[in-house]
Length: 449
Length: 164
Image (cartoon, rainbow over all chains, first blue to last red; front, top):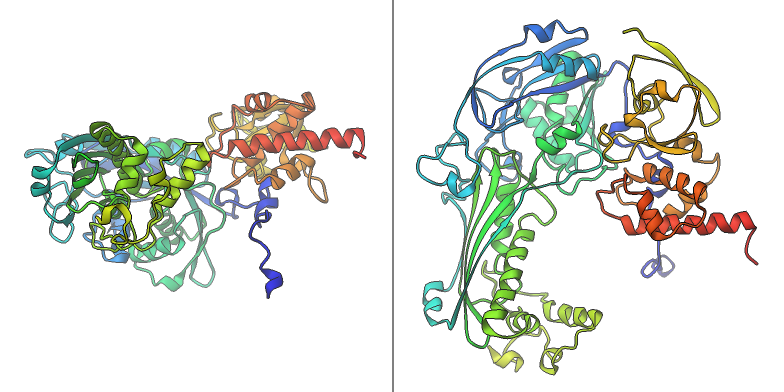
C-alpha cells in the first residue's frame, strides 16, 4: 500500500492532458448527431413588458423551420432551480408567460433544420409587447412605488418570512455607544460575466427505448437532470445526462437553462436537438455575478479592537434569483470576516430588478464580503493609527471563538497564515505578532480577551 | 446564391467541399469535415480558439470565408499531431500543465507553432505578443508562455541534435 502513497510533492500529468493538447477532448460543442435540429430563442428586446401577442406566421414559412415552442408547451413552466433544496417559491419561467422581466428573456423557442434557418425564423417572429417601467438599482427597487418584478408583490427574496437574511450577535447599538471610533464604508461591486471559452450548451437525443440522452456542459449534472425531470414532468429514469469536460464554467454553468427546453424539443420532434448559446447570449443573457452594495459600520476601541459591526448588503439578483439567495446566506455568514467581533448585526437582501438574472460565481457572495470588509480593515487601521497587519492580528479569530452565526471557530489559521505571508513578502512583523498563535484565548494570548 | 466547390490542402491532403457563399473555414472544418480540434468560442474573431495556419500564417478560421483558402495549405491541430506521440509543442504544454479547461489550448498551440517557425528563440515578451489574440478565461497565461519557451528549447535542441 505504501508504494502507492508517493504522489505528494511530485508533478503528475492530468488524465485529460493529452486530449487537451491534441484537440481530441470532446466538448459538448464538438458533438453532432444524424438528423440533429437546432434550437434558437426569440428573446425580449425590452427590460420589462407585457406580452400582448406573438405572431409566428412569418417564421413558420422560413425554409427549414420545424416547430416553435411556447410557454403552453412546457409541462411545468414555472420553476426554481433551488427547489431541490427546499427553496420557494417557484418563480422563473422556462418560456415567458404574460410578462417579460429582463432584456433577453426567452419567449419562444424555434427549432429548425439548420442553425441558419433557426436564426432566420427567430428574426421573423413578431412580438407585440407593451413596455412597463423598469428598475435597475437595488435601493430604487425597495422604494415604495418601484416597479414590481416578482409575482408576489415586493422585490425581495423572503427568508423564512423576512425580507433579508439576518445574523445577530450581542448588541451593536450598545457597543457603538462605547466605541472610541466609528468607521463607516459603502462598497459597490459590478456584475461580472463568467465568459467561459465554451458557451453554455447541450444536445438532447431521443433514444429508441423512450429515454433521452442529454449531452451537456453543465457544472451541475444531477441538478440539471432533476430540474429537467420536474419541468418536463418526466420520471428521472427517462433522462440520461452525460457531462464531461466543461470548457470553462466558474459558476456560470450551474443554472438549468438549456437542458429542459432542448429535451422538450427532442420529445416534440423525435430528433436530436442542439441548443447552444451564441457568444452574445453568453454575455448578455446568461447569469452573471450579482452587483452588490454593502454598507458597513464598525465600532472600534482606541487600541484597535472591533467591538461592533453592522452590515446591510444588497445583491442585485436581476429578474430571477437562481442561486443568488444562497449566495446571500453565505455572504451573511461571512460578512464579519475571520475576525472575532462580539456584537454583530447583518441584514443581507436578495433584491429583484429588471437586469439579467444572476447566480453562482467563484466565491458565491463571500468574495464581495471579503472585498468590503478587508478595505474596511484598512480604514480601521488608519482611523486607530496602527498598521494594517496589526489590526488584523489583534482582531483575528482564535480557536474556540464564537462566530456571529453561532459556529465555534475550530480550525482558525489566520494568524499563522499571515505570519507565513509576511515571511514570503519579506515583511518583518513585530515580536509580539510573531509570537501569536490561533490557540484558544484564556491561555495568555492577546490579553485573555 | 448557388453553392460552390472549394478545394484546399488540409494536413497534406487535398480536400474538396461544397459550400454556400461566405461559409467560414471554421464551419467547414467542424461541421463538414468533423475536425473539431479547431474550437468555436465566439465566431467573431474575439477569442482565438479557432486559430489555424494558412500557408504557415496563424489566422482565425471563424473570420475566414473558405473560398479565401482555395488552393492554399491549411494546418490544424489534427495535422500537427503525429500518428504516435506528441509534437514537441504539445509535449511542452502537457509537461508544463499549460491548460485548465483546455478549450483555448488548440488555438494557443497553433499560434506557438507559427511563432516558433518564424523565430526559434522568442523572448517571453515576443511570446506574449504573439498570443495577444488568444484568450484563456481560466487565466493561465504564465504557464502557456512557459510552455512555448520549453517548446522552443526542445525544438532548438533537437535541431542541433541531442545535447551531450
